[in-house]
Amino acid sequence: MDSGAVMTRSIRSIGRYGYVHGRDSRGRINGGRKLSPGGHQVSTLLCRRINAGTEEAVLPAAWHGAP
Image (cartoon, rainbow, N blue to C red; front, side, top):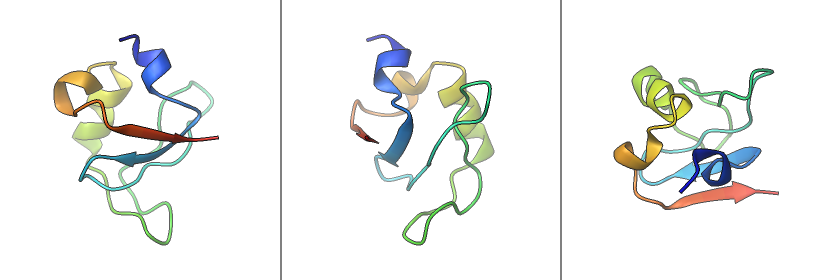
């Protein structure tokens, strides 16, 4: 699956790793800090792997994108 199709504009949940919301100007996800009241910290390494397009290898295909 194309990682661009997997990653929607606002990523709501990444399996059991917690929450990541939004992207920066270069289209990379924002993470590594608490971004929402119900959210969890997401490791910088995990964000790097997701931004590198290898998220399918790290996570199951259980991504839920918000509109």
